[in-house]
Image 1 (cartoon, rainbow, N blue to C red):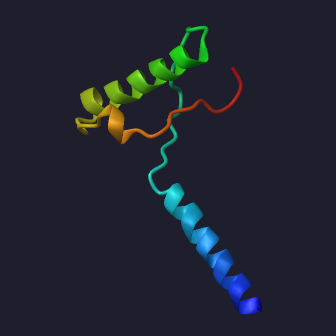
Image 2: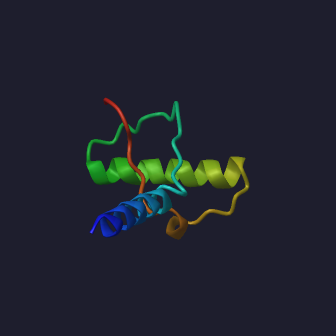
Length: 74
């Protein structure tokens, strides 16, 4: 029984690591002035696409970005 629990815990850790594998945190990004959450998310996504493609020449598309959200206080 203990072996099953250890294996499950290791699988959970591996799954969590895989989920975070491509995460990025961007600092000092100007906050959108939009009032609706959907509009803010769209503005954040547009900022990321602009930065990745214009500055870094990475060739990123909308489909490459799974989720964008803001950390911290407003």
